[in-house]
Image 1 (tube, protein in one colour):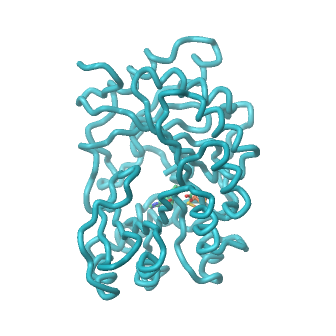
Image 2 (cartoon, helix red, strand yellow):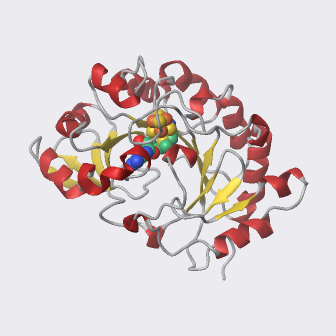
Length: 327
Ligand code: SAM
Ligand code: SF4
């Protein structure tokens, strides 16, 4: 085995998604129940210093790229302090943030100044009444204002994630796609994963990636694209002829990306989760707080990283919302 972090199938692990909170200021219909979830006690949540220590110990093993997520990460106070600490870990090449965008107009500048590289923003509608209906909160989110704030702060590339839900927002895919004609943004359409409340509807609400591409094909001539220069994950990208941005589709329901999976997840309470779905995790908080080295625990977790997830069999390992894992 070559140096670095590898799992039992030889996949090189260099990407850590870090959930900094399980809480959220939204209650998106496809993600979190209206009444919320049984929140983690504060004492269970890793401090910024503890998160940084995990990254510091994983960096020599090959960790290079980080994504800060939640719940909604921007509701945790002083997130810029965490970004600055993570930035100080030398081997870390890329720090990204996943956010619902509502606080980006005020936070984009300070986060960029602290060392954040780029941002993925969720936006499921461009219509204020519908945004509020999906988030089930009276939000003041204007996705265009938030994405512009990120772009102007230098958080590039700006990616916009749209979870497409049949009968809820699938009539807006063309409007989202049109944004890429005039903005250097990367709009990614995500197939709904039927977990949580929408789990019961099974595949009925899922709009397959092929159908999304056919619909947005009415906006202009679509050509294959390599997509944004940074952070190419599981999205397959296209670009309208003459456009400045790109469109992508992420199709967890019609394809799996497991063969090339390079990621693991750290939950807000310090569990290293090696697959989004299924119960594959190791507690890092206990050894961390006992002052032990984490490498043996990490290697044990990776030895059990599954070959592929079981979502298509709708076996989701007790997961009731993606907010518990940061998506
Ligand atoms: N709160 C942040 C946000 O909304 O971007 C970060 C956490 S959120 C759980 C991460 C991503 O998971 C978001 O892009 C969200 O749209 C996506 N997500 C949540 N539930 C989903 C589902 N059932 N199917 C597909 N994507 C989902
Ligand atoms: Fe919150 Fe993000 Fe889940 Fe929406 S998708 S409820 S913003 S964690």
